Length: 296
Length: 338
Image 1 (cartoon, rainbow over the protein chains, first blue to last red):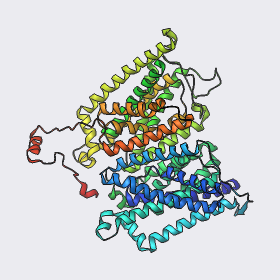
Image 2: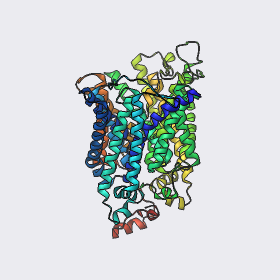
Image 3: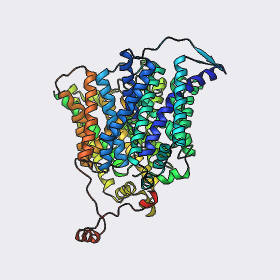
Image 4: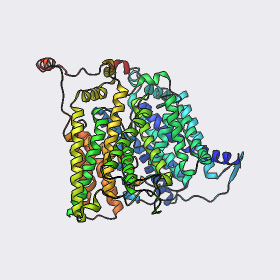
C-alpha cells in the first residue's frame, strides 16, 4: 500500500510535466492540423536555454519562465519561417510530418553540436522532503505539480471564458467555417504555436528539474509519452490530453511496482494500444472528430 | 580505401532494399509505418539467433534460443518473421484507426519494441545486444578478409536484384494499381470494392519481409546488433531516402537511398577532420535534416518522380489533352470530409 502511494506521488509529478506538454502539443495540432514531430526537440532546446540561464546565475524558476518564453518565440518563428511557407506551397499533411521530422533532426543534433553529447545539470537547491497523505515530495516536485495545475486551469479558463479561447475552439473544430465567420485564423494559428511553444518549453525545464539532468536526446522518449497522452485522450481534444497525461503519467510510475523497472514504460504504452483497440479515436473523441478527418 | 568502398556499398545496398520495402508501404500505398526499423531489427535478430548456435556455452551473451542453421535458412526465417510481425502490427494499428492515429501508434510501437528488447536481458541480450554473429560461408571459402567482403557484397547485390524484381512485379500489376488507389483516394477505392484494410495489411506483410531481409543481410555483415542501432529516429532516415528519391518510383527510391545513406550520412567522412566524432555524427544528421527540407521545397515529388500512369483506354487521355481537362478527378468525396 505504501509503495502504491509513493509511486502515485511520482506519477503525479510525471503527469504534471506531461500535462503542459501534451496540452501544448494538442492545442497546436487541433488549431493548425500540423503533426509536429519536432515538438520534443523544441522542448529540449528550451531546456538547454534554461540551463544557459541558470549557469549565468539566474534563479531556477525564473529560468523556467524564460525557457518557456524562448520556447514560445522559437515556436512562432519556426512556424512563420518554415512551416507556413511549406503549407502555402501545398505540402500535404504527411509531407508536413516529414518536414517536422527533418526539423527535429536539425534541432536535436544542433543541440548536440553546441552542448555536446553529455548531460548537463540544473543547480538544484538542497531541500528536505514533504509528506502529504502518505506520499513524499521534494519542494521542487511540489512546485512542478503546482505549475502543472496552474497551466491546466489557465488553459481551461482561456478556452472557456475568453473570446480568444472561443475562437481557438472554433478554428480547431472547423477552420474554414471559423474563417468565414470572421475569426482571424492567422492570429489564432500564431497564438496556438505561441502557447504550445511556451508549454513545451516550460515542460522541458520541468522534466530537467525532475530527472535532474538535461541531455540532447531527452525529447525523444518524452515526445512518445506526449503523443501517447494526446492519442489516449483523443487527438485534438485538449481536455482529453489532460486526462491522457494524468493516466499515462501515473501508469508509467505505478506499473513499476508490478513489473520490474525496465518494463514499466511498456505497460503505459500497452494500455494506450488497448484503449485504441476498443475506442479507435481515444477516450474523449466525439463523433465529430471522426468526421473531421485529416487532409490526406 | 578498397575496404571503405565495400562498407559504403554495403550500406547503400542495404539502404536500397529497406527503402524499397518502405516505398511499397508509404510510397505506393500511403501507409505511414513509423515502426519500419523494428522490422529491420526483427530480421537482424532472427538471423543472429539462428546463426549464433545454442546459447549458453560462451556465457558472455544471453538469448532465449538459438541454432546454427546453414546460410539461406536464417535469411528465409527472417523474412517470414518480418512478414508475420508486419501482419501483427498492422492488425493492431491499421484496422480501425484514422491515418494520423496510425502514424502515432506506429511511433509508439517502435518505442515499445526498443524497450522490450532492452529491458529483457535474457531475450536478446538487452541493451548490449548480440555480437560475434558469424557470416555465411566465411569458414569454408578461404578468402582474404577483403575478398570475403567483395563476395558478400556480390551476394547482397544478387538479393537486391531479387527484391527489385519482386517490387517491380507488384507495382506493375493490377495489385499495384490497387495500392495506388488506396493511397490516392481511400473513399473511392472502397466504393469500387477494394478491401482497403486487407490491402494495407498485405503491404505490411511484404514490406515487413523485405525490411527483415535487409536486417538479416546487415547483421551478418556487421556481426553485431543492439537496440541503440534501431531507435525510432532511424526510420526517419529511410523516409528521407524515399522522399528525396521520389516516392512511388523504384529507381528514384534507389537514388534516394544512395544519396541519403551514401552522400548525406557517409559522405561527411570525406569532409576535413572538423573535430570530435560526436560532432561529425551531429553534422551528418543536421545535413540530412536540411537536405530533406531542401528537397521537400524544390522537388517535393523527388529526384525521379513517380511516372504518371493512365489506364483508360486512351479516350479520356486524348480528350483531356484536347480540352485541357484534369485527368484525375480531384477530390472525389472531398466534400464529405472537409
